[in-house]
Image (cartoon, rainbow, N blue to C red; front, side, top):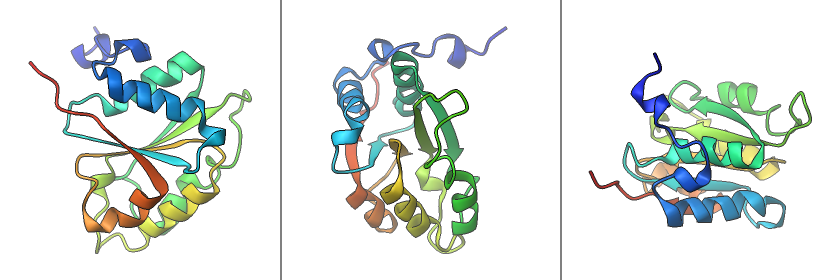
Length: 159
C-alpha cells in the first residue's frame, strides 16, 4: 500500500495546484540555457508543493532528478562531494537532469561553515538547472544564493 502523499502526488506539471508558480518554474527550466541565472529558488510554507513541482516537471520533460537534502549535506566538503560531479556530468543514459537542493533552511550559519558559499560557487558553474527550496529564503545567510537564483513563490494551499 502506497502512502497517501505518494499516491496523490502530482504526476505532471498540470497537476500541481500552483498554476502560476508551476508555469514560471517550467519556463525557467525549459529555457535554462538562455537564462542569466543557473538556479531557481522555490519558496513558501511546508506543503505548498515545492518539491512535488520539481518531480512533476522532471516527468513532463523527461529529466532525471538528483536530490540532496540540505539538512543532510551541510558543510563545504559534503556539498562539493555530493553535488560537484552531478552538476558537471550528464546522467548515465545521457538524460538531462535537475539538481534539487531541498530544505535549504536546514543549513545553519555557524555549525556548517562554508556550506552556503560552496553551494553558490557550484551553482555558478552548473551545466544543469539547480532548484533550491526553502520556507524562508529571506534570511540574511542566504543572500549570496538569492543573488544567483530566480525566486518563485509557492503560496500556502487552501484546505
